Image (cartoon, rainbow, N blue to C red; front, side):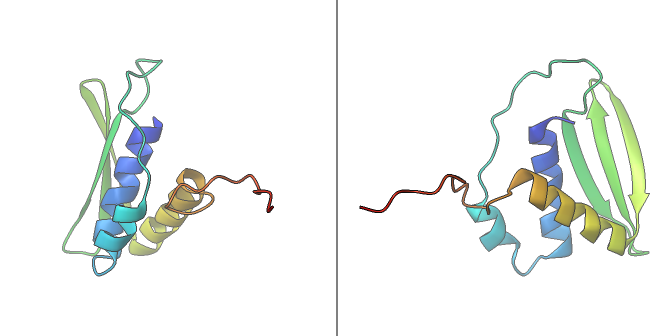
Length: 103
């Protein structure tokens, strides 16, 4: 999956799982630019939908093909947390990890 696809999924899960905080959290997050994938087998776009049964369906696009996977709410929250750590290891503001020297 491309970084952009992972971010799209993170944004969508944020809106579904944490609707009351989504505007603030997603407004702070740095985003990745759209780029052409280096491989034709990479997922380039993601979406997530919530069903009435409290299940989440993830949909990924690989060129013109799609794939789907169903998740429980707990699994969706775990996936969101994992994406959050991978995409924003130092926070949503995109701060650099290097320590700055104080004068």
